[in-house]
Length: 244
Image (cartoon, rainbow, N blue to C red; front, side, top):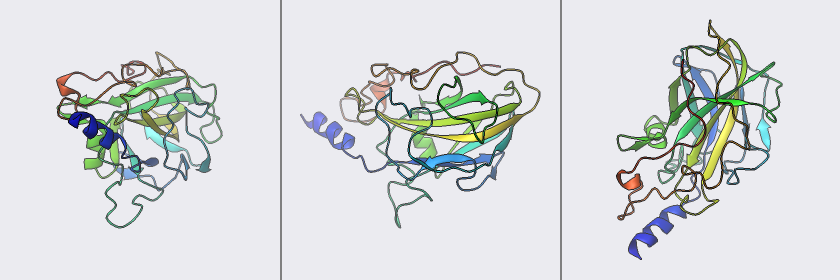
C-alpha cells in the first residue's frame, strides 16, 4: 500500500505542464514563438486518437516565419511551463514538473509550404528520440538544460519545407491506460543542404501510437516508487529513427 500511495501521489501532480515555444539552430535562438505554432493552454492530449494529435489544438500563436535549419545542424527545442516560461517567480514546475518523466521525440513531415501547411493527413518520420539512458529520462536532461532539448538534424534530410513535431510523453500516470500525457507543438522549418531523404517508416498522427503500446501503457516505478523502470528498458513508441 505504501508503494501504491507513492505512485498515486506522483501521478496526481498534474499541474506541471509544458509548451514547446522556440527553436535554436547551432546555438542561435530563433526567437520566442517565431515559427512555432502554440496554444495558450499547457494541457496535454491523452487520447492517442485525438484529431489534433499531430500539432495540438486551439493554436493561438501562429506566424509566417519559416526557420532555416541546415541538415546536420544542432537544433534546440525550448519548453516552458506556460507561454513565456515560468508561471510565477520561483516556479518549481518550469519548464515541467520533475515528476513528469518520459521521452522527448522529434518528427518531420515534408510539406510544400511550411508557413501554410495544415497538419492533417501528413506523413511523418522520426529524426530524433531521447528516452531512458544511464539513469536519466529525456525530460530530466531538458530540465537540467533550463528547458532546452537538443538533437542533431540528420545530414541526409533532403532540402525543403517541413513541419517539425516535437513531443514529450509524460509517464507519471501511464500505468493506467489513457493516462500518459502527450505534449506536442509543431515548428515551421526549411532544411538546406544536399541530403536526399524525405523519410522512411512513415506514420500518421493520429495513428502512429496505440493506447496499449508498451511505451504508452507502462509503469515506470520500481518497488520503492523510483521512476526509472527498475532497471528494465523503456521502449519509445513510434517508428525507428531515420538512419543516414
